[in-house]
Length: 508
Image 1 (spheres, rainbow, N blue to C red):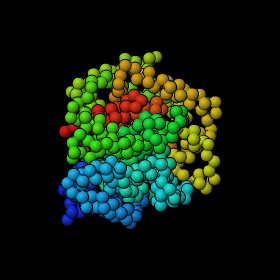
Image 2: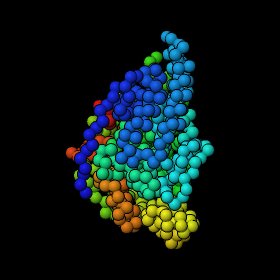
Image 3: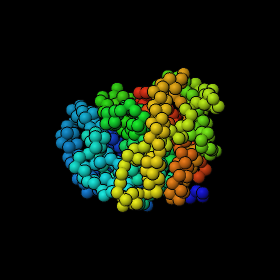
């Protein structure tokens, strides 16, 4: 595959602009935009106009499947009225106190965002990326969308996804594919590909995603962003079942670990409390942990390094040179910050690190829900070949084999804490090779398409099976401008630690 030339970056705008429109959100962090809005240096209407303008100007990236600027701008105008009513009549200490209270009650007030088109947002069409079903227009937000909206964020539309969120590339028959802002001929990944493209291109400051097998970390890695997958059951709006059949969790995508921590605190329902200095806006525990790490460092951690993929030896996993460099550079950053690195001593043969037959077992787990569907013939015909293949595969698999596969993965997940061994964190590569060109996966037979997706993302799905948290951290940019990452896997409840670790690794 030939790498396209990198697109010329958009010129950054000043972080505060009352007289001229902003170009996009890459001029500053979400933390800074939050501060500027609460301080009255920029309005929600200006921020929302920036998002809509950037999304429209870069429509060729296919980040959005639906835009709703009218509703978003109306909501932004209402929020500006609230901010003015709360703050503009106050001065001095009274104004500072009002700012603190407003930022604690609505931590992301005035900032635009968008949900992937698998999530219901009231009044916006939900397509789930398929032409086989008519779009629905829900009357109510899904719980995650409701929580994020309660924080003051403004949805400007729905971002592009693959059909039913199944593949790791965001292409469907409804709208243009989500393209990678670093190399527009290549995929932005999936299934939160549209959200990642929007953040990487400066259309949005932050984006909530969901991750059932890598769907936050994969597009974050492809587009050079931070992507956090929380542990199973960590977020209050995720499904609570402890079973491995409960793979999907919600997580933030952002340009910095500090921004990801800000959104994670909102998604987790954390309380925002005042900072140590009067000028500091209230922060949640993840954001406070990140700031503490940036200013004071972190306790020394024991980090195990795993390069074997759980898909081996069933699949031949070959890492690109840049994937290896990204791992090495990430490990070097960790070592420079005083952490202890140790390779696994049981990566091959009878003492293989991962469970045997993982590829076969995970395929059964991943496709089983589709085997429970019984779509009419016309709906089935309208689905993508890969989806039809998954349905047929699941229906043809003997029930006993399915039960055995799920039971094997349940046993593995039950031992996830013991599996971590002596380590606080496990480090693996993230993507095995560069994001392919648009249409490449779909050009393959469905069987080879799925196998190639596994080869492309050989370390992500196993973390969902274990139910542990993991974060994608960009560590290397190659000569063609593509980003490469390391994956860090933590113990149960270590999301804040992972965000802090990522922040110290990416600290300028």
